[in-house]
Image 1 (cartoon, rainbow, N blue to C red):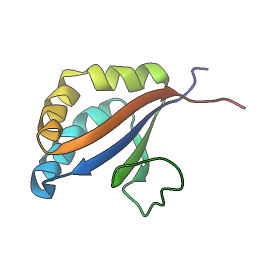
Image 2: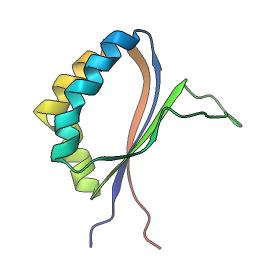
Image 3: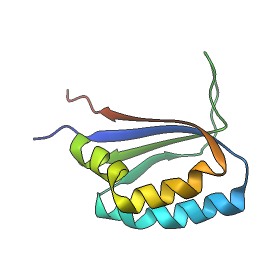
Image 4: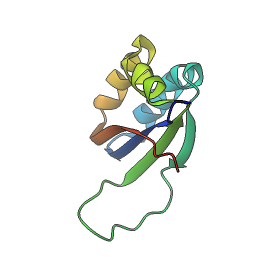
Length: 98
């Protein structure tokens, strides 16, 4: 069974109205690749190091799905919107099986 894949994003958003357009645009690729939000901008405390204002954790059925979603034309179009109004980081990581 393939290990799940995750996106971990940390972002500072400069324009919430345009960022909302990104959220609308990413809905289809996320649905196509089985994305499930585990964390979506909730209350957070930075205890060590630095972080951006918004943290998102998205689970995918597999690491391959997580990578394929990011590389898909649909997500790349959405990302083009996000990049104009946010700064941050996005990591794609393979899950750990116990």
